Length: 494
Ligand code: HEC
Image 1 (cartoon, rainbow, N blue to C red):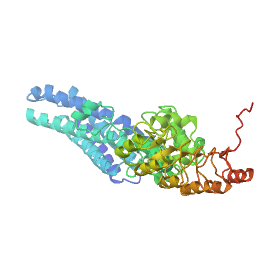
Image 2: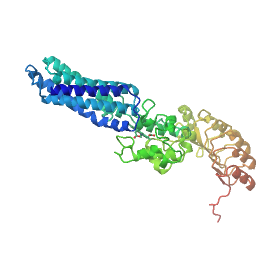
Image 3: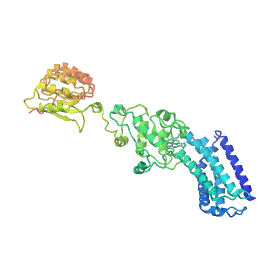
Image 4: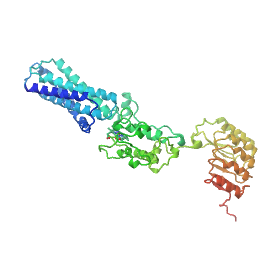
């Protein structure tokens, strides 16, 4: 009799559950999240109790099913089934409330919600059939075992879906070693993969640094589909839209940005992000840096100060010594036959570094047989030469014509050559020149006009030339930050 009443009680519980589940979408009081959070704690009870009862059913009970149980008393397994049924109802009610309040991946949530409710119904039905009827049915071993197995399957599946909702798909496998991942045919472990950077000016800080970091650390919970806290961190727009409590980024003010404040809460704090594991301080520093520099979605690495707080991390990402200017060029390999020909003619031809395609060419120690006509041999290498020294050679104005074909020249050494204003005119179109040495040439103020429009010029050496103080002053005005040297201050005259 008592057991019948228990069954009735359970059925009432079920009705409440189904009612709550059917009025979905209307549970948005502050009460709901409180009950909702109870779900995370409660679910473990039916899982434990029902799995334990299933083990009983599988190994112990079948032998006894033949002997009719005492109808008025619960067996040990029956107690577990009762506990499981009640706690399943409670967990399912809390879960349904939580589902309405939180924002989870809708597809997974739908399955989890209904499988959870169904599991509670099944748990009640199983109790009623096994323990709650006035005249207990006699079950065959097969019936008992298949019932226990089906119930366990439902528990495991809905538990797994729930775990996926809260912790992301990769919760179980995230820290799996690569060898095991290979066996399980899982994709390679996530790594911070930054786009290979070749040019600071073309490296957007947000796309190359900030977004990959957020994607790796936050996107499992904050994406367009599953916006926990109302926040999508998979795009700049989503980030700037903010979350349920408003903006999360205040440009220029990392100390006031919710995004940063949450990351710096002590682990275990209710609001700490990410909830389950802290992210490294170096990554927080990067996010801070980006926000303090104005939180622009488009700024490039070249246009943003790089304080020491981020240098190391950037270096670890391979972003510190970001090449710019000619070093950022991707050129084909220089023609080795042309390099050999130039070497034979007396030029020293070197790569500027390692396997760089950029070349340094020096004729200043060329043998007497070297003639200005040999400059024509550099023509096939014209794109690759960034540093050319013709100091003390017989180079003259006409032979400098080949320099007009070397758009990437950054260093030009023409000291003590026969070059004059006419020769410098060949350099008119060069845009990369940074340093030019004209010491001991016939260059005059007129020739210097050519240098005025070179955007990257930072040093010009002019002593023993025809340049006047006026001409130099003019050049200095055009390049206020360049070093324009006309006097040899270091020369000591005895
Ligand atoms: C495991 C899931 C999970 C991960 C990973 C996660 N969050 Fe959250 N986040 C949540 C949940 C749930 C909330 C809503 C509850 C709350 O406010 O605490 C939230 C809320 C927030 C909010 C507040 C939004 C608002 O306006 O209420 C911010 C900001 C935030 N998260 C930032 C981050 C950042 C940054 C990361 C990555 C470094 C991150 N989160 C990773 C689950 C996660």
